[in-house]
Image (cartoon, rainbow, N blue to C red; front, side):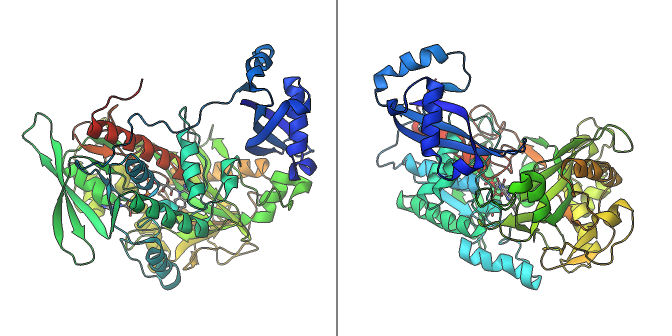
Length: 579
Ligand code: FAD
């Protein structure tokens, strides 16, 4: 097969592109169209930079005479857009173990990382045991609606916790910018399709699933893990690690687990556990710190969620083509480095943009308010929303022991404000401070503080909505968001919003709504691991996914789950990795 990139068709031809693509591919290969036996679309994106909007394709073609492939490619060796189609099959470093009866590996957490770790272990015959603190998706959905509709939070079953992980109530964006030379992202997408996702996720450049479809896909992936001999235990929260201290380096011996159905605690012996707990498992981070597991503070971002009428975004992105059924609701990505003024040196960027979606209450802890966004596959809601966040580095994190005591219940040795390195848990302290402050500002009833952009830029308290109705449930309290965020965040937003308004016409419109606070953009810690994917100082513990700082998003978390499962399989089966 030959892969050809940068084949461009006008939007009108993109509705039935195969004939036109076949002709374009043949021309690029300097062949007659009949010389191409088969053509499949590998990726499709849209280029809206010129007045004439174009669909841009990457295609794979099979020649009618496959033996001619090398001869056809030879004169095109200098063309970066024409090359042999790479091998995208999953080739794990170890073969499947038939009738495995050795130690069963454990996966902690059944979000995207845990799901794909468990699936890969099951496919390799290793019959994993999954421990998930939350409930199966359907019950979890009821609990999550409890917060959105009745302001009732279940701390173990919510937007962050439960089957499907943090990505369940989401836009279900399924793309990533990770380096992926083994095409593991492709395996994740193919597994999604086998589990019922639409096939277009394989070839759309920016595929997405939306929440309802994600629910069905997650249930189907669960069934596949079970069918392959895996076991999934819901409402089982891992509360501690039991380590064997007799070895030169501590090694995992067992997990202490709380059964949330009856409150009983028990030990589950295991020497291989993948820790895929996500970025909101603060109790886990604190316990790992108490146990001395090597970790460090990690940069993340904080800010607000911003909502605009979807039509404003569509017109800015697609111009006169806005509303074309092929294009759907437009997305955007914005970045602004602040060069001068009080926020000089900061970077503001859009995060987890959800076209035609809603802003959601995303806290997992009582007495806190956190925003995020979700949508359905149709992306048909009237507002576009995105996180509008400012990067923060560990030197910015709090170091005052009193703040640690207040937010974490312990000062965790945060006694040296002059220490060079930030305290590993300093990011948690900051997140909790901001989330608790937003809860209070919102009225202490899970309503979120909100402000119109015009009022924010004029430093004036908002008293109600304008053209844009906020979609956040259980509702918003109109206020001044300067009280919810540090000055370096609000200063950076002041500088960035007008700049974004120059990139997307209307972006800084007075009636756009900002809702706060957006604090869970990624994990505030990195639980470090070595080349063998094991913790630097606890053998048998495999930190993985977003919570450990090795992924950011559904696809990359799934890929990290696959890679970590392979590393566990290599340890268990004793076979060295392929070179
Ligand atoms: P998680 O998905 O967080 O899963 C961790 C799991 O571990 C959870 O199920 C949790 O219950 C469980 N757990 C935690 N502690 C314990 C414990 N002690 N014992 C047992 N189990 C435990 N990303 C995208 O790519 N596209 C999107 O459109 C998108 N939208 C999002 C929308 C929202 C509202 C949110 C919150 C996130 C969104 N994300 C999106 C981010 C994405 O969800 C995460 O990057 C991804 O889920 C991380 O996967 P993970 O498996 O590493 O962790």
